[in-house]
Length: 120
Figure: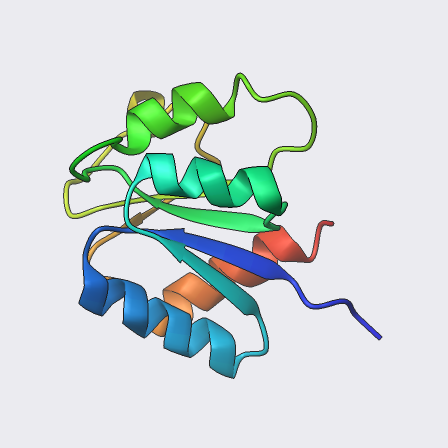
């Protein structure tokens, strides 16, 4: 029996966040949500997600500030999928394992979830 994998979705777009949570919950994942990087760090302080979807452009603590803080944290680090409507070169996203451009499909998202959660 596989343990339930926890996915953290960090996005200030409430509709997108709700859609991602619905898809992930329906696939049997435990889905946590945050609207900015600071809230995400609080959640990570309490739990260790298996994967993080991170919107790069958010008010408050954006994706880059989150990455700086997260990578200073000792211990286990979950894989991170950066999300943006902008086309980004991986070099512009240090500390991000993969990238998904908005708009994306549920299939694209689930392919990445499977890739990164099967490793652990």
